[in-house]
Amino acid sequence: MFMTYEWVQITDSAEELSEMILQSEQVEQYQKAYHAVYNDKNLAEEIYAFTRLKEQYEEVQRFGKYHPEYSRVMKQIRVDKRRLDLNEQIASLRLAENELQDLMDQVSFIIGRSVSEAVKIPSSNPFFSSDSSCGGSCGTGGGCSCSA
Image (cartoon, rainbow, N blue to C red):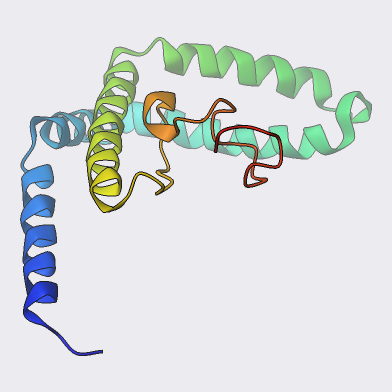
């Protein structure tokens, strides 16, 4: 593939957009929240312990209520998740993640629509996903009689 002037312009524009995103307030807030969570040794250990508990939870889910540790693991995962969810630092990190994801969704939407109205845009926000009546998740290419 030959590098044309158009490709050079596209590459330069992509790098410029990337720099703008990296210097955005959303990225700055995310980095601050991330460092606040993972630089706190106690909180990082709690997250690591919760990750190990999630692995146990997945093992228990394979066998359901017949697993000998089912009741203990099910109760413990709810208690630990609630404790982590109520932590201010983790709540701030989740909020920052959502704000950054919204920015990325908006950028993807603008780029996708500038290429074509038919471009499918992956998004966590249903507003940016699709204009079809089925929400864009039927995967049949219009087989469900939607307007996809």
